[in-house]
Image (cartoon, rainbow, N blue to C red; front, side):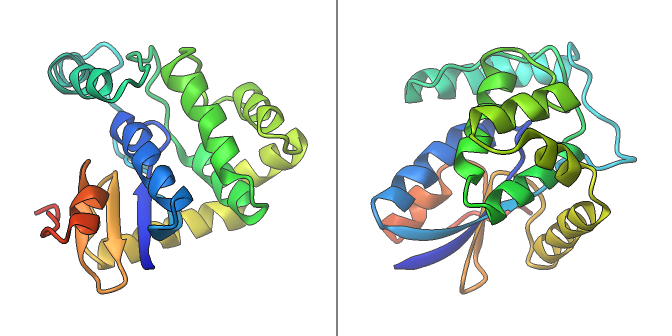
Length: 195
């Protein structure tokens, strides 16, 4: 069985969509996946303008078309939060074996319910929906150790050539940036790293 690292950010629509393909392959026993949170815009990088041209054009020309072809409900969020706290909590949920349920709750809240998932209330709600302890989720989100772990994952990713999400990294050190990487890998086609 192939082993891959899959880099994602909860606020990335492409991560949301590609996660479904990765989960399906994982469930089918085609790959063993290490889920790795990768913050797209860590501080002090500026966040995208929620109603800025970049998001409107990308969503109109790419995101909605791709989601429609995959049968995935998705809406342009009103918010563009920093994902540090969310991803730190994801590390914690992964250690407890509940990452998938927690990610699903957060993705749904962000892309379907238009919630600001970087708030304590939404982190708590995501934990409750994933059958996790909401107080422990908040503690993990603000944990200096978890935030340091998140930064370490990013450093290791960048050293391996990962520069964005969604990305996958094989045991052989090959990477693919964007959607379709798992499909290419399983078909024996060359991966497309970010340049």
